Amino acid sequence: AAIDEERGLFRRTAQRRLYPSPSSGMAEAAHLRLFEFTGRLVGKALYEGIVLDVALADFFAAKLLGKHASIDELPSLDPELHASLQERRWGCGGK
Image (cartoon, rainbow, N blue to C red; front, side, top):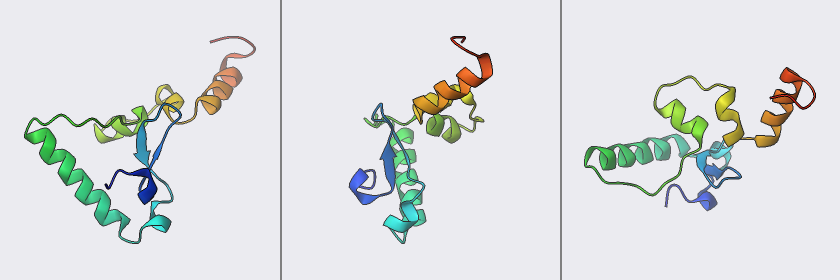
């Protein structure tokens, strides 16, 4: 229930992948404790070898793995912003 979008802790990308909501503090006063609890549950499941059917946004998964997010993960959050930045970077029609 903690990852339920209605709770306000998480949002979904256009590809229906989860990431923490930047406004989670407004939705739930104890949001940090709930994030910690959710993290412990996910960690315990991984430790026990339990596969969870939860699709995480690429940029969020990279952060959880300790990787620095790059522009390569941006499409998982905002495909239009990524396309716009690529257009500015490479010019008209380039990739």
